[in-house]
Length: 203
Image 1 (cartoon, rainbow, N blue to C red):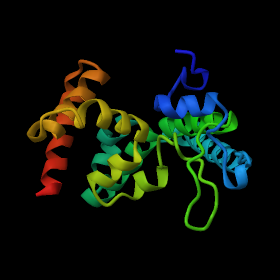
Image 2: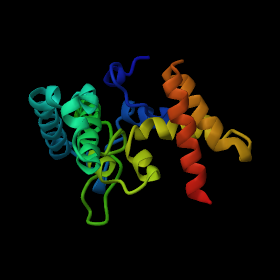
Image 3: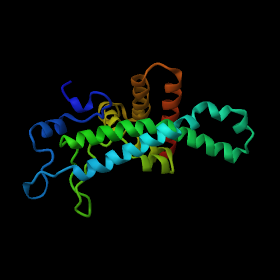
Image 4: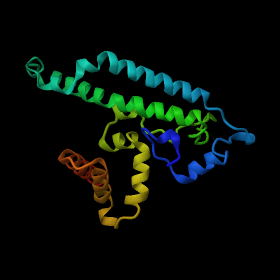
């Protein structure tokens, strides 16, 4: 309720991480020193700026209605699929902007430090909600899900997947996600299809 960084677009975070930030222990790194987020923040602001410019200058050229335009319908199927992919990618760009900006805001306030990578560099991705590169280059549905709306996926795992009966965990988690999004039929088709993809990938 009082977590002002997450008011507009999230992402969700866990209470223990929030309290560590409130207590001033969230960003304590090596030798007890507080890690500075400036490098991570500047990279995320730059990324958000690039996505914003892409959407402002090219977004109107790739609206969903063009995929049924006669000019594009007359293309061969490979070209049409390519245009469809570009159109779908541009529908994701506003989310990249919002979530990357939100991530930068969290980091700027000192929230989001996750330790160090194998090279000893500080990681500020505790509340990173999306990895655009991994989303766009994913080789399967599972990789896409792992890189998209990540913090919500962690939340769904805690509140639904881990608590549901073993045989119904995947289906109940996707169903909860569909209800949480709203009551349009498209949500239920999308998430139930996602559940089938996930179950199929395991067998």
